[in-house]
Image (cartoon, rainbow, N blue to C red; front, side, top):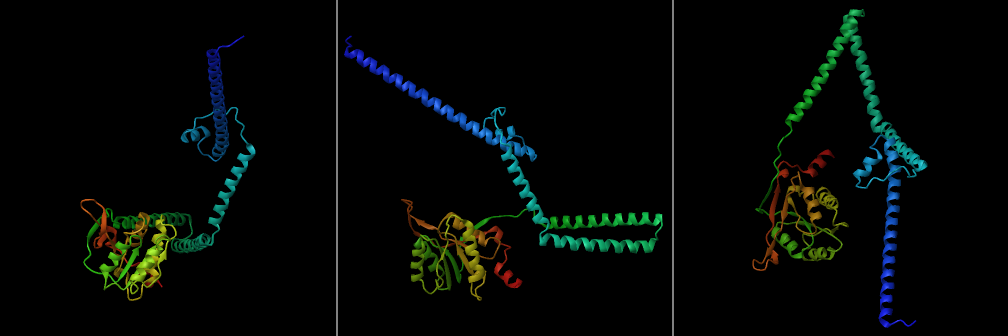
Length: 343
């Protein structure tokens, strides 16, 4: 039988369509099977977790599944691993009991408890003996002693409540917080500087000269060379080596770094109120950490704005620093002074 070329082409196209249809059905079946396996694994895991939550008095399995945004799967045919659930619950309870024992039998907890119990017992016995010697030991006297003890207890509770309410009433109910910006009206003898843009850093340093005596450079590993260059340009004020912060996206590291400068690196004749911190450079996290180290203290803050071209909007330099005052700094105290008084 001779097959024409047109017929051969039609058969070839039909085979290709059939092959593509089979591949599509196979892919759909595999994807459906994988979804079913995944749903079964998720349901099996949450069924086990739900059993633990139920044993511990937490919400049941179905509620937890709905809160997680997973379609609840019928748990009638799900195999729950009792050994795994029992082991997990046992470990959780053991850990909770261990933590409770550590808290109860901790020296900082148990000693005040015993001392307070002994003192309270001695005081109670002394008061009872005093009332008994005063009122007698008959039945009427015992009733009077009980009433007097009750009055003393009520009076003590009322006195403590009054003291607490009085202290709460003295707390400020509306603490205004505002940020004030104005031109610096004085030069400072100390400067804490975040190093990034060399031009802005030089502007901040030159503004406080010749009053400036010490400048501490805080930088990252990437800006360490810029800090060294600033130290070479201003050797008389940049006496200390640059302080390198490892993680520039961790504000707490900058908080600890700036706080340590104020607490440990200031000369004795240089108080905190004479050292200003510039939070312009580096990342926003660095600025946040620097501001946190100066909030509620006498440590001043400044910001060095950029000079921009009014036509193009591009940065062409730096303006003089601006004094930034936070509302919470008005009643601040010197942490360094408090620390010296305590020592």
